[in-house]
Image (cartoon, rainbow, N blue to C red; front, side, top):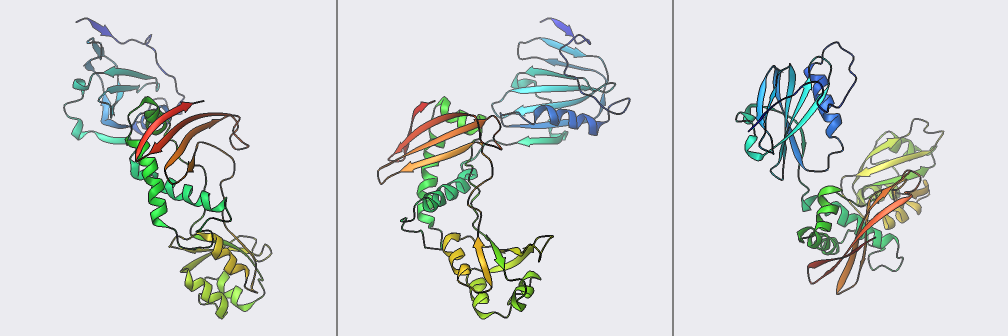
Length: 328
């Protein structure tokens, strides 16, 4: 093996810091800033205290020696790879060295955990299944559950199993959508809140705006009680801007709930979040009784106004088995 001494000519990444020397807090931030866009699951460990010398073996079997004062970090990737990160104390210059899994520090258990980006789990996608279920309802007035305030857990579970089939499949495309891009749906449907445009002069609405429930209006209180609405938020311009939001700890299909509020004399208009502002990565689903087509996509280019570029990965799921179809 050959010895390599790391000098200032090494490929450092430069950061600007305010102090003459870099504190450990500043070094933590430098490392965090470097890894914030990292796609691979990982944990970052920090060895407390300034180090002055270290010898390690790289992934190529080379021996490297560091001979200046530095803050030391170790990145443990979940694919068994590792990486040492050195932040020079005098100026914040950063150096990364890839190593083999057997070059992990022997005392790593004593190091401080700085950042953790765990692997994606299928449980992370139950919320997506719920959003996709409601997406089917809100786009179809004839959906059998359109006027049912209860969320159909059996239907949500069917969608969840479609996502799970793709998650359990074995392909580079599966790894791309789950592990690299971590694609989730872009829907933001509300299941536990309603916006109310109200008659702010009514005594019952004055009570409601102050969080007093029951309000004294029997019809309003019946709707609030039926769906366990128990908290209220008013806006800083209220009552000049006569809108408030009521919240419940339970989850409902808010379409029929909004209809009930709209029938009250004290409520001029009831509405709820019907989607996100802007655009971004998302999941779309088309399903019938026998199969489903689920498509994951990433959006790029001025997504707050509407993504200009989009890349798609399409899978077909039948009989609980997912097959990658195409990317475009």
